[in-house]
Length: 287
Image 1: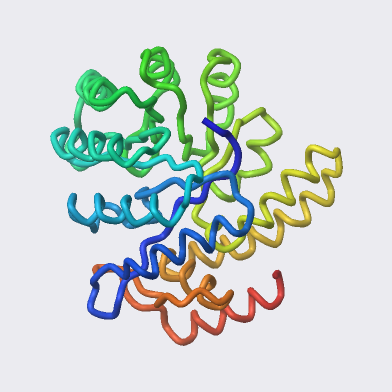
Image 2: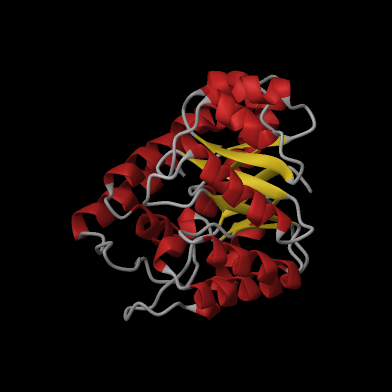
């Protein structure tokens, strides 16, 4: 699997809430054209909890066709193990390079139950598994994360958390595994402690900026890299404030020429006119 910058692709919707599959194919080509290393499909940025299992399968098929051989990791996590197994087996038939899974959510499962879930998902296919460590789904102790990384089928972790001491310890203790920073605003910090890649919502519209930031950091031009971070993080801060962050990402992509609507599925609400103006002004200032 190629490491680097992966875009957690958004899901375009029509005004009636139906998935815009043509827009999804166009979005796939749009983000890849920015030079990113691959796509992370059907994660939180794709609003996966708001999609049915069959919709997730059709979305993946659409993305794979449009990606034309590009690297794809697909997130197959769900509230029920059987749903995840069905999605994992379907992913294998689609020819993706890796599956990923968030922990089962809503109920307060024990760690032993969560670990068995990851074992079941990992053993469902020959594909390597990336654990999606999303703090909004479940919090792990360092010992629990180490236990997951010792599993034979687990090859990587998407680390969406702010405790970078834990991330550094994992990178040091598991040199044969790959770790991807999942918090956009921590991109450069991840580079500094040796993360192998990054996966973040804002890469949908700023993937080329993060690529340039990575290049500058590798060249030792840290201050120049920080200038890019300051700009993309200003937009990320606005994304947090928007109340409909994925609609905001789509709004910016639309500003860049992608023919999709800046809407999410309910219960997300539409962007207000005031927020749209803030997005436009910030985009003109920072991009």
